[in-house]
Image 1: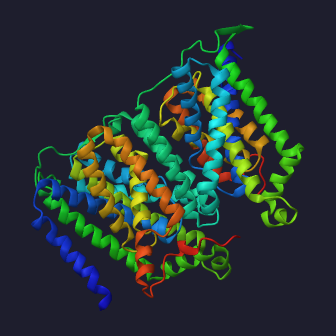
Image 2 (image 1 turned 135 degrees about the horizontal axis):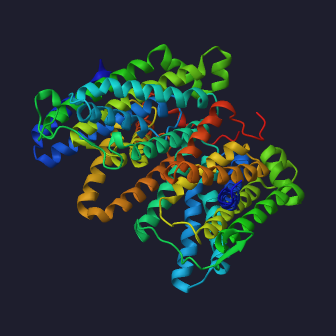
Length: 327
Length: 287
């Protein structure tokens, strides 16, 4: 039961946070941290555990965001109805990208994800039905509670917290299931895993599809909170970048890595934006680029793996540590 | 065939030669070190900005800008090799992709922060006017870019296949340890490969800067073009990159002309996905 001590302490803190720090800015910040933690945890399933670096994850985020806003703007339904639709589209798209590329070396997968994300952005930007460059808006005034259109960030905060807990439980369950063992074996040595009968391509594909589905939920939630979606905020490559860097900074392939990454980077960005204003936009991403580069160069396992190593826990650090052996 | 179609194809070939030039840098590094440089398109973008700065500060044209961009980028390539690539090469896949991707962001947004997001361009007649040959109108800047890019790409192929330097580089690509036993330094050869690859992007960038729009995010589009070219031509193959580059240039211009300018990128990306599905080894590659 000692394992549950720290997670429950953090959960209690997370529940108490918006009551202790009750200004609108702080509540909104908290909600955004949780939202990016969901998206980064979803990325972690394929990027961290399966070791397949998706650089176009925003395409699934966009599926969810557009499905949620579309179900309101096109059919007059609650955005909630868009969530299952977004999941279906995201999973289908993941299969289209994953089936051919997950058989090949990991580079192909990364390139294909970028290409798909850019293709989707261009197609949506030129599709009148999806609002083209203007995008789609959600309900401006809530008709009932199911429209999930609130002025305060507080309801979103608790909604996101619930979804984050579910996402982490799914991830935890996955790592302890047969699939998790396959994934670990594949990440250590795909050839060895295959020769022992682990269905490598299929396992990676399932991980990718699961990750796509959860990312699409994150996209839908984001669109509901912001109230609209356009090609930049729903399908821009920079969202992928944020998701990826949060997971990598905290620790890819560790359960709480993405949460830690989101808790560091979201406040950093919000604060630097409010200090520097619009001029800071470029600078924020310069810093992001530098952080990713330094992590890759010096600490591919992320911050949590560093802590685990210094504290000297018996828990095994992320496999990413295996650097330094010439082939 | 109508004259206008010929015009479109010639334009595509000239642009395609430039694609071939910068893609051969990507394919060289990929084939030799099994590293995909996600910052490759942003290297081209830097080459464009070097040409732009040379023009705005000194009023110099491509005669000054192109060699300078080549030099600056080749230097950057060596720095990147020793500062980043040499270490992440031995690391896990995650570190390799994140490392060059982080570099891409760093370069793109440093330029964005410094120069702003506005579209820049060099004066239309910086190279010369427009020639009329047999009813075709060809801009001097595009002609210069296409011809120089074609010659340099062919030169690169000859360098890799006909010189002792090329043989040494191929030896390192084949087996770094064995090459080391033969008295070849893998580190030096790989640094030279990075200098050549990055220098090629610098030259390509300076050449297309004469007629292309210049914007910090152009590297993203050009980077994907380079991936498409390399995956079409087969990784590690410079002749493959040449054929694929020319082909993509033509396909892009034709689809821009026949379907509409906004769809030309979509066509190229879909082509890429199509190839990943059905022929991942490329047109000329072997599996």
